[in-house]
Image (cartoon, rainbow, N blue to C red; front, side, top):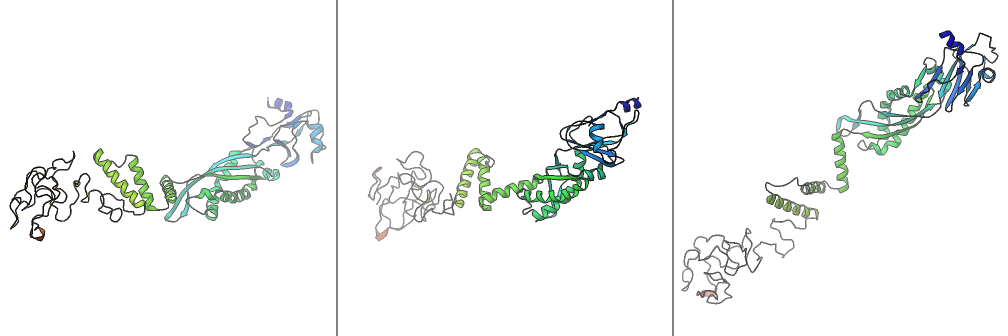
Length: 406
């Protein structure tokens, strides 16, 4: 059966063409009289005899070997076919297209980086473009011992030297170890030159090389992202403030209850705003006025109709919540009608006529100091009635309850 096949083998062509093959060899067959050579677009055909090149045919078409091929061979151009004898030769078919190879580092490359004694692990990936450039070198180095050669074989050759080339050119052109992508063009250009010198030893040229991505470990990538965000703000303190404000906006800093959490957020937000606006004194509850002479709410100033706010300190001598010891006792020599020992009726309650919601337990603004002696030897009329708390306006008798005040 094998003898019959050899007698009928009169068509020389790339059988079962594979676009991923760089070359394929038609071999171990005898070319009979009347045989034809078929060269398809994107292919070149090389006749070989005893390992030597007899001729290279680069135009696609269908050729009669006896009349159109043999006359152009070197040592076989005078070959004559016999009745039963043929010409023994090999035909190497070359794929002339440019191949694109997708590459990636086999493992992380350890690059020297400041602050990382053991180096920084980096991976990279990209593409490379190759094509056959030297037929004689390809035959001498590869085709002489191989029946076919695929693009995967070339990829293997590239990967074996790529890690060293990456480290070399990153060290030369990588201006920022944490932003290598910015230098990827210069790094790629250097690698292409070195890689072409290495692969050209097999008769193949590297016509293009590019780096698509540099991949850092997840922890380092997060730090890079944070550094980029910080550089946009330009100040570590402001970046921290922005992070806290974002957390509050996302509801991640709620207090133990919704009300207390909201109050804490408002206070923290006001404090952050004060710092970010250049320390203009807008902090809440810090006891500092916003501008000189402009009092803040609750510093002994009335909120409504002369009533101080709950929870803020009163001026010196102002009676505190609950009658102090000795409050209401008449000083020595005080006139008749001066309040006696014991808190006056209604003390600790909002005065009559006070607006709804007025705080309890607070003495009205302008109450006299406990035990204070009247000026000029005469008792001065209190500003508020000691019985009902109604403002007196300097009168000797309370306009509300009629109590004698002096």
